[in-house]
Length: 149
Image (cartoon, rainbow, N blue to C red; front, side):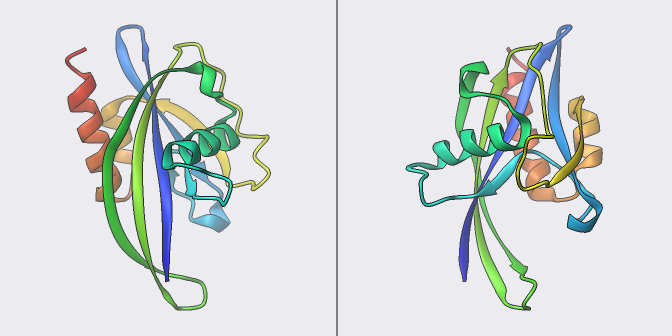
């Protein structure tokens, strides 16, 4: 079985420092920190459409609040066992969205109830909070692109 997922690293410049938005999964869904992400839906025409939809669903951040987009920041594949024991082959497309410094985040309107907390963190703290090396690699790549701005 194969599934396509899209992840979006949300970042902003605040007080001359870069901050990154992380969401905390509910305890019954893993209790880990992650950027907004989700599966491609039938109505999504592109992976970027999926990214905008997932960001809005999970954070309340609208497309109009995005200042810039880094498309195709990263791509990777990984396998994961499903709840039925079947191995699922995932492919992940990672984007990055720079948002307004004063953007409001609202995780309470997500109909899927995936997260119970969020926070803006420094690059260093993001690397400490993220569990998977593939996510850290995407953050490192983004930081190397924006740290010279």
